Image 1 (cartoon, rainbow, N blue to C red):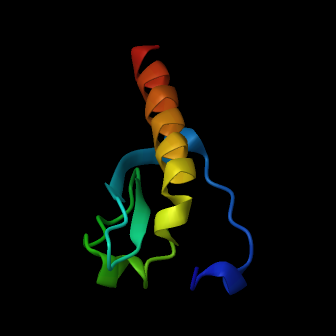
Image 2: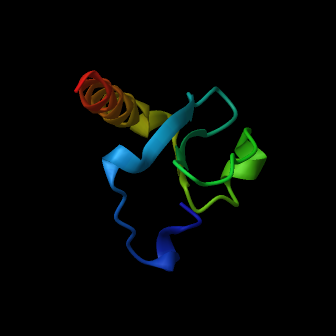
Length: 83
């Protein structure tokens, strides 16, 4: 949420090399963090994700939608690798 004022960013799905996903807990928000081909590996953890422009922080109530997003991206990445 802290990156919402930075503007829009379009990500090419074939440039994603990995996804770091942390579900929200009782006391902490969750996040989904993307690493790109040729990019540097970002440090994992909610503290680092809050400062990473390639991460999205989400609330517990938003988790089902982010799980669907992660599943869809994983599926598409698998399809691209199978080609």
